[in-house]
Length: 165
Ligand SMILES: [Zn+2]
Ligand SMILES: [Zn+2]
Image 1 (cartoon, rainbow, N blue to C red):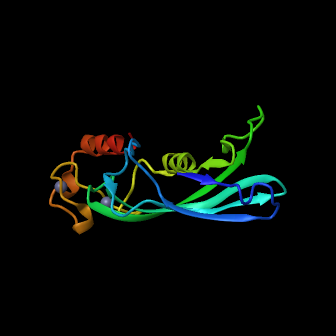
Image 2 (tube, rainbow, N blue to C red):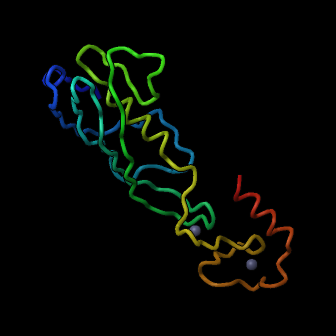
């Protein structure tokens, strides 16, 4: 999505709001299975004494599996957008500075980068999810399984290793 900044590019203190649906085609997110709602970026471009900043957030619903118990989850994400726009890039410019194309800013690129950088590789149904028993496969959040004490400790170690990967 290209935003025309003609109306604020010469006016210090001016704001230009934006809101658009992010095109996620071609983006690959390992940790999720898909989006359950449109991915919407909104915020504003602000002219601070000639320096242009982009602030806002991306809202989306994701579908994923708990990394420990494999339960399917839906989560709402709020991902911050924080970027700067410049007519040319200096060597010392930070990574979050994007080039203007004349009076236009490519907000689609900024939103895509914010998504890619902030999407987690793993989601959990809860921080203290107990996972599944490596022996019988039972979801231990539903209660202990019958394997109990005699669970093979080597399998428990393996399960921990797999989780860390
Ligand atoms: Zn879980
Ligand atoms: Zn078990």
